[in-house]
Structure formats: structure tokens, C-alpha cells
Length: 303
Image (cartoon, rainbow, N blue to C red; front, side, top):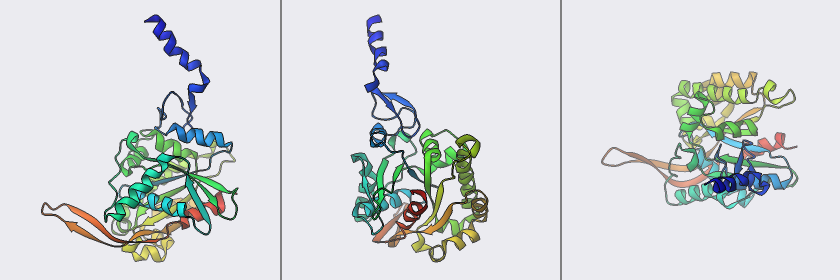
């Protein structure tokens, strides 16, 4: 037993078995995922061997805001390339969210709801570059987060280390809100948005990050705007009229922000079975405003 204990302990002296997590800084040994934040260690190896500091962009939002659908469709567009930006996955696991989303929509259904357990989240790492300036890049590095987990983390910080670490280390964020829910239950959504904005601000406060630290760029995205034309017509005005608390907080604290509206589905219907269970069925795909938030982030955050 004594000899076995010595052999097990000796592995901590082997630098080749040591892995530093690029997301939270935690040191792990002989593992495929960080034992603290559950980030795949392949992600860390890719970023660290590149020799350039990471420029993280994370996707946040309330439960039901459509984070999985938006993220999956955004990644699919980036793979095909646009006139301004292009992106490719840096590892095989990064394709899972894209594959899940596109596969579900092709079968006239939405992806399954993301579970709250951190060890089940699909992680994404796409390196995105400016089509005209290849040296200008950023890393979309984010787990496909459950909205309930984000809410729990905001109310009880460090419940989910992955959310805390990615929010703290991101140079920009895309924060999603369901435009229909904002229009119909604006006060409730505004309160959640205020808590989330304060959480972001606290993690990037100058005394903790240094006087020269810049607050992250925040792209506030109203999803499902095909059902909410007022959000699509003027996202900033829509935010002012329905989320005054968030608007004031952004103007006073999160100065580098902008509002966007996006939609994936051109038309859909709600089906009700004989037990009263409702399911929304997408009829056809008509994406709008998917890439614009990321283009805005790259214009001001990757020089």
C-alpha cells in the first residue's frame, strides 16, 4: 500500500500530466476536463499552444431566450463564411451545438432544453477572423449554458464556476432576451437583466482587474423578433420602453453596449396534444440579424 501511494503521488511531479485551464486557471492532472469549471482541457491546449492571448466572447441569457438555437445557427453561418467574418471550430466537440441545432430545425423541431448540470454542457470554441484582416481574431468560447444555471449563479455567485470564469475573462459578451417575454412581462425581464448586468459589472470592477481594464463590449440581443416587430424595428427604443432599468444601468456603467434584434424562424405554430402539453413547431427557417452583433463586437474589440 505504501509503494502504491508513492507511485500515485509522483504523477504530480510530472509536468506532462499537468494541465492549466485557460478558462479558470485551475490546475488539473490526467483529465479530459477541468475539475473546477468542467471546461475541456483540449480547449486550453489549443489556446495556449497558439501563443496569443485569448479574446473570449461568451453567450449569456435567461432561460428560454433561445441561446442554443442562436449559438448553433451563428456557428453554422460562420463555417460557411460571410463577407466580413469567418469562423471555424478548433476541435471536434465544438461542432456538437451546431449539429444539434441544425439537425433539430431540419426535422421541424427545436433543440432539447439545456440541462442545468454543468458536466452535461456542450462547449464551443470557434476562432473567428476578419475576412479582410486575418490577424484580427476572437474566440467564441462558451458552454451552451442553461438559463436556470445562469439565474442561480447570478443570485448565488460561484455556484457554477464555469459561468463566473467565462464572464470574468471575456472581452465581450452576447446577452440574449426573449423579445416576446420582454414585451409581455417587461418588469420581470428587466429585474433579471439588472441582476445580470450588475453581476458582469462586479466581475470586471477596476479594483479587481486593474485600472486599465476595459469593461467588456455587451451586445444585447432580442431574440424571436419575428413575433415582436417592435423589437425588430428599433431594438434600442424597444429596450428603453420595456427595460428602463437595464437601459439606465448600461448608460451609466456598461458604456460599450449596443442593442440588436434577431430571429431564426420565419413562421411557426404551437401544437397542443390531448394531454394539454404544448410544443412549438418551426415551419421554415428565415434567419435575420444573426451575425450583426458579432460584427459589431469585432469592429471595436479586436484591434
